[in-house]
Length: 409
Image (cartoon, rainbow, N blue to C red; front, side, top):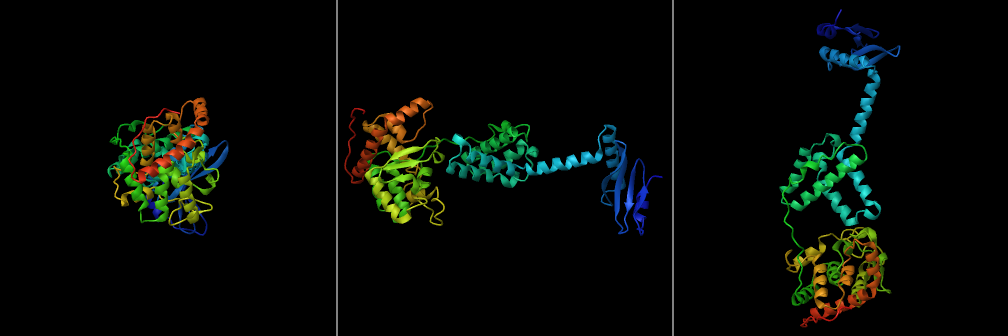
């Protein structure tokens, strides 16, 4: 006789568990404690087995019968319902571990130790920050459940703040995470591939840089008069002489310098081109570094954070110092010292363009040519480093410098 909801509800507990049967193997087990448990009895491979369906009244009679029928469909397909239940639990556990946040973290760790293609420290920090902006809306979601609309909604929050470049970069990083999930067999396809063109394109802007010689002199004098943190002042004084990328400057460590040999070796892991970059040091650069050594040496970061010597100064420190001196973003930036050096060195006509490119650590797609020019122009770069610092001293003094187009060396 089939069960009724009333009969189950009115069933009283006894000293021992007892069953109330329904049909096709479904029954409810009444416990001495009063609990009522749904079970489905079936045979598979000649053995009697039981499948737990749930508790009453959380699972009502109609739902219990529906789940029983699902189990019977599996039996008809020669599948064991209990084994299929275990597989589903395992799939759920695996899916729970394959959240966007977990795979994004795994991807970032891979990129930080990815051989010649490994992220530089500054790139890693920036990328991890941008990916963290997606963790609130997407982080806990299984990556297989994320749809293009979910990603677009997340990056548009960044776009609406006017951070167009960050929005585009974040979308690119999200796509990289999805493609990594595809490559590691945890996802069928990249959910961001159809989002190209969905965001507003940012306006391409160039770093503010002063390239007029007279104004460069004014800037150098202004830096000498800076009254903020001494380490910030020294960073701004050194930057025009070495004209490396701002991230390379602020991540500089004392172990990279040979002051007696007038050489700074920036390791490949910190450079954009993923190759060691050798920087010849002028007498002026060494003098500034010796002043710094008295403040921050003999080991660790050359330009540590004011909060902790275990961290480098903020990526905004030099720019903030320039703003304090009255220079707007359009006028001068930390990165602008590179453009200043590139422009004035090229305009001087004294140095081979390839020597200047090597000094700026610009890449060369031809490895053989790159190796040749690195060796061929080293002596010229050493001479150029000293000439450039002497030239900056002239500009600082306010001397009128008329570029003379001398023959290239």
